[in-house]
Image 1 (cartoon, rainbow, N blue to C red):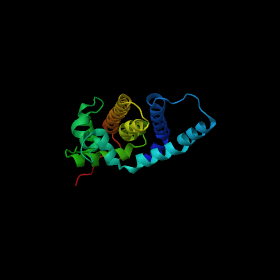
Image 2: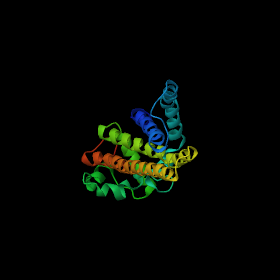
Image 3: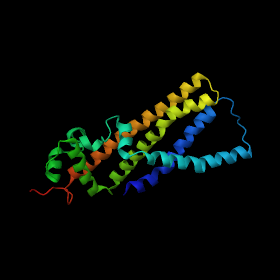
Image 4: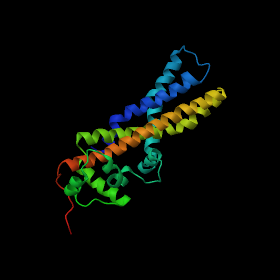
Length: 217
């Protein structure tokens, strides 16, 4: 399943997160907002939630390159991916993966970061439609995009509260809430990414898969 198809599966969750973030700012942090809603304000709210938020989410999560979003999640230099250490670090710590069986089924295991990621991707393409792969891949992409979406709110929330005349405490509180949200979604994406790359090797460790073993030259 392509990344575009997987993104379509979780797009609504990104919209819901963005809407929830706006609700937090408007209803819980900004003082003086009335609980009574006129027809006019309801119409504006519907416009915000059905058009503006989805478009804003799409522009934000699609504007940044994949490698940069992974950098935000893993807090490592631009271009780093979990597949870069999957053979040397993550696979050996996964009890589901028999390293000897893996080497027997796929051939020599690479050691360099770029080589590890490239070889892992070759193995991934052979099992990408397996249920245990598509599910965790979708989770990784979803949490990664949630983290990307959360990051601007760390700045936008206190600025919005400042312009609305909220107290300094409310401004710091808004920044803290979205910082926590960013950390939680980034950590969730990080572990989902590691689980994703390890699931691929777990399948190759469990059984030989056609096309996995490199021919000797």
